[in-house]
Image (cartoon, rainbow, N blue to C red; front, side, top):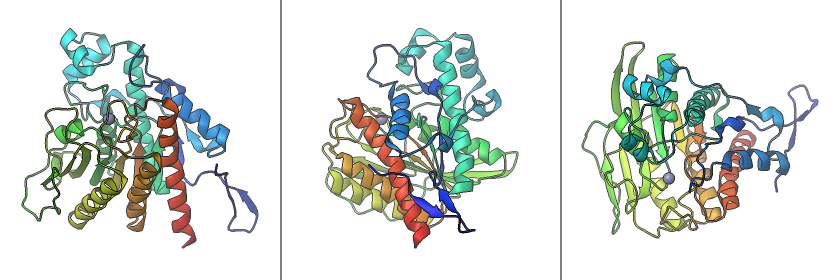
Length: 353
Ligand SMILES: [Zn+2]
């Protein structure tokens, strides 16, 4: 297990090194789901593991506040927000969410959105920041689905845009499931372009960034990448700027090749001021809701690739954790903690070069 390393401060004094970026976390990220395939305790387990293993120390963590309603409303409709706050979702709407409604659940999602806003701000300052939560990429403006109630990443992008901090954002969604909520919120403008090299069973869409008019500070452009298993939820996959529809059983080498090509293609046509990395743990070969075949080591290489490409271009990265349903929850925890290790290794390597 890696231990925190020591460096010298600019004045030559020994500096007990914290992580070179912040982790956003609260125990209240816990989702009150009862018996459910979503391991709601994973957030607490990740926090615990980071501290016990010495990967992080208490001062590395920031505690989020729930996002203000006005920020949630930058993405979600007033009607949907009202239903969530008053407990008046229809049975059908609650079924579509696939998580049981409770006021505590709503608060946890408001906190996740507040956490992603906080992490995005710190990413701009430190180069990287991690929300140990969030990544609820199936949430739509007017409804929740697939365990996702509020689209925290979209809320963070819209809030930072409103504050005049970001006009161009990119989402890199590596959860095994298609980022349908992200694509619905930031629909790409259709454009022509050279398709990525093709392989049997893999399809690509190539479209420009979503361009959204916002009255406060000009135009927001969001470029969305989704690498996902083609044969998986959701059945309807609205187009992202780049979609990579992976066949069942895609392995480490194949996945990393597609990710590399998707990011290279994206960054040839779009220069983001913020990259939102949705680092789902569910492309893992032992995942109960996924059908890809990535190993734990392969998933860490995936994280390193995203972070290395971003760091080499000085693009700040905000990380969220999204899904992860490994047969053994400790594997999900390991995969998420490895994302933090990968970020530290890439940042420290970049600093020493
Ligand atoms: Zn997922």
